[in-house]
Image (cartoon, helix red, strand yellow):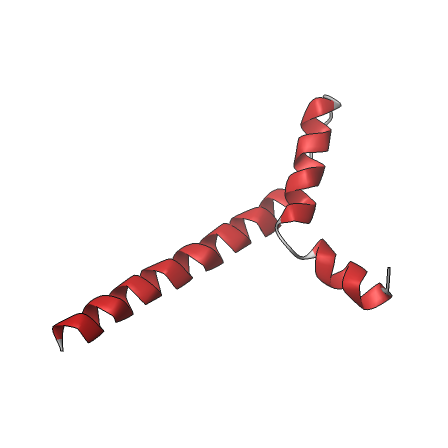
Length: 62
């Protein structure tokens, strides 16, 4: 796999979620950074949903 794709893949939410799952199965602690990346993605997606919902309501009432 190309280096660029690996770098991008490590910052997508599936990568840290997979590592958290593997750590839970192996009864080992997961790294806090993996939780952080997951929470950042959740926050980003939540912000996008809130923005789009607000924007949609504003367009519909105008």
